[in-house]
Amino acid sequence: MTSEHVACTNWKRVMLFLKHNMSYDEIMSIPGHTIHSWRNLTLLSTLPNSEIKAKLMHYTKFMFVRDPFVRLISAYRDKFQGNTTFHQSYARTILNLYGNKRSRFYVKGKRKAVAPQAQPTFYNFIQYLVDPRTERTKPFEPHWRQMYRLCHPCLIQYDFVGHQETLQEDAEQLFKILQLEDDIKVPPSYENMTSSGSVEDWFRTVPQEDRRKLFKIYERDFRLFGYQRPAGLLDE
Image 1 (cartoon, rainbow, N blue to C red):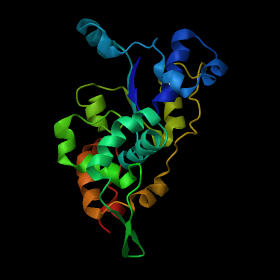
Image 2 (image 1 turned 180 degrees about the vertical axis):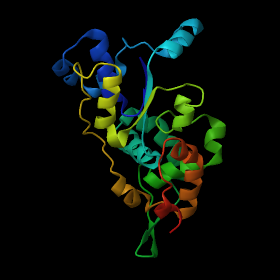
Image 3 (image 1 turned 90 degrees about the horizontal axis):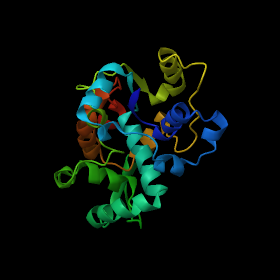
Image 4 (image 1 turned 60 degrees about the vertical axis):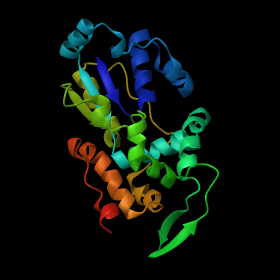
């Protein structure tokens, strides 16, 4: 079984459960940062080419996706508001490029300036993503790299594609396919939850021109994985 997906902390818990025969309570007691540093999970990229080809041919392959704009909001919240190490490595670059520019947002049709802040704002983050210089310097970091580029669904024939928005139902269906429905369930996700309904609030700080640029960057993810074009953000 191989996988590429969002909500990777809990999926790593699932993998550890299957590989080490740990109990559900044991898995749930492992802190998230420990899960990510666990070295006993084998990456496909570390295997010989012949073994990679064999696994891609014979293993069940699945991925979980998320609304691209909601995924960006969660990446910002997790990596710039809650992760100090990550914040230091990327925040400095973003602040140097955009931190001295005044963000703008709309309130009842009126434009109001917001003073620069000590850490990147969500709008600063979007400025970084839509800036052509960003990708020319180095590829997008995996937490905001387009899913089609991260998981290559046009090259890998995935057996199952689930959605974060229907995680519990889709995971149950996947476990039935794998004949594991009696052995494990997906741990609940409570941290860094971003509802689709709050997207407009987050993007209120982002001018429409930049929203449209951002959509162009992630348009293929919207189309490939069945997400509707966010007309309310792009056409207002």
